[in-house]
Amino acid sequence: MTPLRKVSALSKASGPSRKSAARHLMLLLALCVVSMAPMCGKRRPPLPPVERVPQRTEALTGVQRGNQVILSWPAPARNAKEGSVQSIRRVDVYRVAEKPTAPVPLTEDEFDARATLIGSVPYDEIKNAKGMLTYVDTLELAGEPARLRYAIRYVNSAGQRAAYSNFFLMEPAAKVAKPPTIIKTGNEESETANTITWEAPTSNVDGSTPVNLLGYNVYRTVATQPDGEQKPLNDQPVTATHYEDKTFKFGEKYTYFVRSVSLGTEGTPVESVDSNSLELSQVDKYPPSTPSLAPPGVAAGRIALFWAANPEPDIAGYLLYRSTDIYRPKPWTLLTPEVYTKTTFTDQNVETGKTYYYYVVAVDNAGNKSQPSEVVTETVP
Image (cartoon, rainbow, N blue to C red; front, side, top):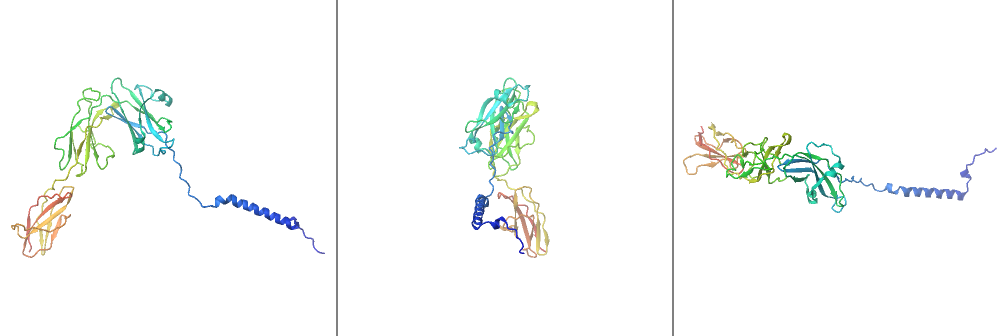
């Protein structure tokens, strides 16, 4: 007998049915390819995250200087374009005057109800800020003591105001000395220092006397770094009415000004506003001191010369001269055509039995030459 075989449903299907199934399968595959096409294209690098424009600051701070409170805070690191609604167009500055004994905590709503808009920082200053923004509040220091509370708000081009910044509190001192007055003496410049002289203030900013004066702070700016950090040249307040700046450099253009220092609220020192300024720029016209030649060392076919290094910090080197006849009109020969930086020299161009004379001259970086040293002499054996 022929064995029985199990026949599948597909094998039993007719020819046309098999073709229809194949067409359906190809259609499904085509749809899958189309749907996955975007995933198979060229991969693009991820886009950087979009930075949001800061809408407030938590770093508002300030300092009293004379009858001024100078507020400062970091400028926005990013700002929207000028045409954008989110562009910060100005910064409004608010102030609340309160009694020194008033409670320190204050809500934003309470501040908003009591605050006075005292001024604004315009867009040009925001756009051109280099790290920090400032606002100067000039006070009339008279009457009862008060505690001042400040805050700022960013305002966009649509006039919408952001939330208030942190609160900055200050109790300004009323009796702060006026600034000193720098005077010209004609003796400002010397080889070792720029000397600044000033007259002491005669009253405080509120017109009262005696003057509340602890001393003075002296400041210097450099023309090549006009936006450099302002830091006093002195470590402690100067009690005299002059100051010697021994850290200056020849050729640099300096602007000096001085501030009085007073005892402020709670014992904190308070500076005055700036005095008038004085510009100084020294040209190095000062020759080095005269070097000193030691007695020469002599050996067959050579003479060794030695001298002490000059003490000036700007010494470029030395010029060494020699002669075989000290009495001739122009007997001296320069042994060092270029400025010589060492303090020893061995003259090997000598003859046995001859006597040689030497002197040395110091030269600084500006080309100034010292007086010749004393002449030393030696005879070659």
